[in-house]
Length: 208
Image (cartoon, rainbow, N blue to C red):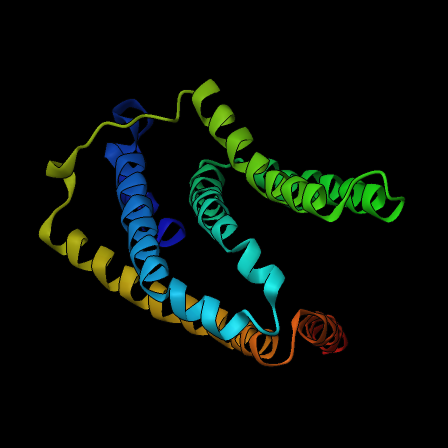
């Protein structure tokens, strides 16, 4: 939606007609929808995973901060990109985060930290890019939470909802296709088998 419709909002003097406020609203609505679904399904997820994937059950609450920070990173990165700043988000996600995870993995392999510390480090590594992105947006005065709903015409509102609906269906179906196999495999067989399957899945994508 941001890539497609932001040009209609672009106006630096008018703080892009309140687009950042819309971004935050959609992000928080999406997160609270996730939270409601997660709380509703949590007991079921625990039940199907307890026997074969006890570690997943132990760390299941990490899904909440991971979802929150991942969601807002992609929202803020898309906003920062349409402001002609595409490299910072890529650096954070593709280099900075991966270096942190690699350091954590090395420390775990060398037995300098235990598995619980590794998981905590991993979660922090996934959350830090969002914090860095917020800091950059604040520094450059793009973090402006000021609604300007009067700017949104009836036609623009229709375009927004159409793009949101299409984006949700397209994004959800893609994520579902990528992850449903690993999820159910982990629940039925175990996390080790799911890990092996996931590695082979990505290798297959590389070959393709």
